[in-house]
Amino acid sequence: MNAPYDAVVVGAGFAGITAARDLVDRGRSAVVLEAGPRIGGRTYARPFAGREDLRVELGGSWVNPDLQPGIRREIQRYGIALTEDMPPGAAAFLTDGTLRSFPVPAAELADLERAVGHLRDASKRIAPSQRISTQPIRDLDISVDEFIAPLDLGPATRDLLYATVGWYTGADPREVSMLGFIAQTAGFGHSPYGFYGALTERFVGGVGTLLDRMVDESRLEIRLAHHVVRIEQGEDGVTVRTGDGRSVQARSCVVAAPTNVLRHIDFNPALAADKQKLLAVNHQGRAYKPSMVVRNTPPRPFALGVGTLQAICLGYELADGSSVLMGFGGESAARIDPTNREQVEAAVREYYPDAEVLAVDAHDWNADPLFDGTYRVDRPGQAYDFLRAMNEPEDRVVFAGTDVDDSVWRTWIEGAVNSGHRAVDVVSVILGR
Image (tube, helix red, strand yellow):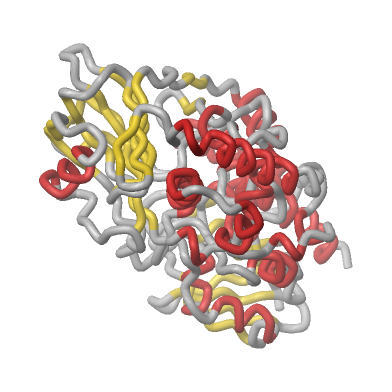
């Protein structure tokens, strides 16, 4: 095979762009094939629908350069500016069927202390600097209920933990593995408070400002509307084919597509049996993130609970006294249309009864066939094995993306960047053979 490229990268999210940029930095030739009409993957910023004066983040957006070294290096390299969220001014908690200003009643404060300590102690078994799948922590790949069973928690404390896990996963907290949640606690410096206060910075101008600089400065070749349906391997290269009959040949391939859609790509030879089994059905992440212009809420609101939305966070305040808020929910808790103003308003009023939602905007990642869900959320007993399986190359094909990142920052932008770096390390070995 006379392969014109050293590598073809499938997917133009942060992992794919990072991998292509790193390859170019190392003097290799690369082309990126993206199925959709834009780059960015599950990061997506654009003007608010019907409000061109506002900008909205419809996917991943938060970072912390103090805790996340990969993002820190990218920000420093390209001179990207960040803005920090304002701290909450009024908090509402919906726990044990009651709307509270503090998460648990006084009688459960000892329960809350035990739950926080239990999570912190479990996180200390994880070394944040090491790959998750190389550490002896398979026993932490269990459900939330199994994790908290020894604690005998009161109902409000249990609901608070359910709400936090639901907020971060967009899934039924009783049906997801705690391994990733515990690993993120380790990433926050072994502090459970990190889920509320660690990731508070976003990119000025939207997350695309960094991606655009990465693409422009390295002059990456990106082909949009190239929907990959088949990846064939031969003795000396890879042929990647699209649904409309186009093909690209390269000496190696980095697949940085969401794992929910990998089973729709025909691999020849077929993927290893363990990968096929783990990719056969969708994972649990079915989140939605409505952005909304809201008035008649307390200043700088924050809400958390077991309602239709598991969390509501402040985007920014507007001059007319209204605010742009972001809600976090999942199909397992309630099926609502995140672009329906009335449905979103009813969900917000569970926490703030006088709230008025003036406008909403969202991207439905679950209905989008190029994603078929949000970032990966594994079932109990699958997270550890998934990381081990997907981080093994298939001859000349290497997998990347925040779904397969083998670090404490899996599912975050930092995880995507980490995964892109690691994929190129593996590809460099392949190309050197």
